[in-house]
Amino acid sequence: MRISPQSRLLFSLLTLVLLLSTSGLAQRRSSTAVRSSSTRSSGTLRQTRTTSPREVSVRGYYRRDGTYVAPHRRTAADGDFYNNWSTYGNVNPYTGRPGTKTSPPVGYGQDVWVEGYYRSDGSYVRGHYRSAPDGDLSNNYSSRGNTYPYSSNLDTGLSSTSASSSLEEADIGARRNVAARLYQIGYAVDWQDYSYYQLTDMEMRIRLARRLSQLGVPADWQQHTYYEMSDWEMRIRQADRLYQLGLSVSWRDYTYYEMSDWETRIRQAKRLSDLGLSVDWRQHTYFEMSDWESRIRIAKELERLGALVDWRLFTYFQLVEIRRTIQRR
Figure: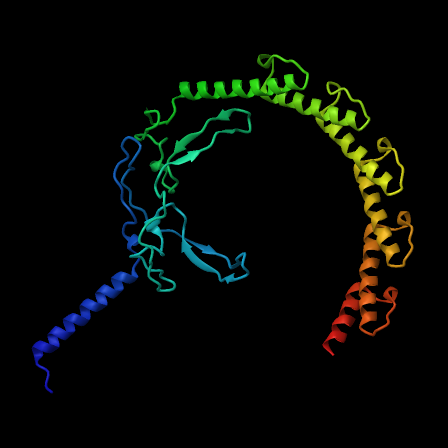
């Protein structure tokens, strides 16, 4: 069949259109403009902007279910739903896979509620709303030209006067609460005379001194720091555990770490005794006795497999290799 020149021209034009549409789809639409939004007004919309997409490398890792995710590249996190390769209309340039997500997650773009908290300097920041993070500094309530809708303060969200007043009220409330707890445990104090940290330190020391008293060691909380008394409590309890194991010591004569080491060695020596080996825990370190226990247990397992070995003649790893060799037969 003979094809006319008009048909050839039409076929060529259709082919060209298909090629152009395919190449346009392969380009990520955010290469020209990712997103543009209206100017923020009364705390709802944001300033118009055009950004270029950024990419980051992700190392290979294992998920909790054990599946392995190979190293790959993804778009940088910027809070913009439309700036992702997985969004419909975009194409992953490394895999050629088109995006499928057509709608953002619930709550996308909405303001975020921040619970009240204490700063490291002790000042309190009460609960408030903030703009959703999206990587754009101009897209914040605190940026000049934007308005914080919850207090109608321009540029800085909360005014310095209202902010300082709120912090002062929160500090007063916190100090009153601690003073009330101090009163409940028998110590009356005027909250106006002390800082929040001073009152909290008093409360912790009084409670710790009471625990020491219950352990038989009276202590004046005003004469000792919290850390001093906390160390005493740990040493007293550690000495009590040693006593239960048959060793009587004075907690005042030894550090917590010394007595803790003794406890681990005594318990290890008892496990060795259960395996038929009598040792003096004072003459050996915990790691020595732990190694012996491991080798004895492997030797007993080899005996059940029909191989008699002296655990003293082999290292733990040599015994493991012997067991592996027998199990392969």
